[in-house]
Length: 117
Image 1 (cartoon, one colour):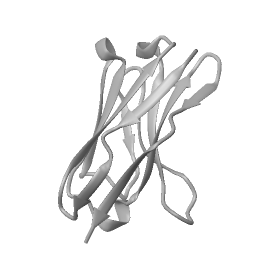
Image 2 (tube, one colour):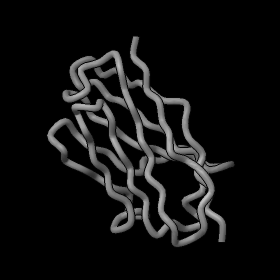
Image 3 (cartoon, rainbow, N blue to C red):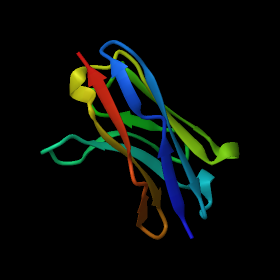
């Protein structure tokens, strides 16, 4: 059974930093693509950042230069380091594991990030 679990959300002041973690189990972690998405109240879920099995990263324009994405295959975990946070970064952040050969996606339940002004 595949499980994806996010952690690290919380309340932070604008300009501050948070690091989100996402641990996945039940799959061959090193072979999967991983992604962070976020959804603010009343808005659609959007891609924040992604990382492939070969460590190629991609970021939304709104977070480029502020967020970094890394993976530790030994721990089956990915990390989203968020710096210079803005109030508009407030959202629930979701982690997704994508299995390329099956096309299956597995989602976590999300972790809430609130950035106060």
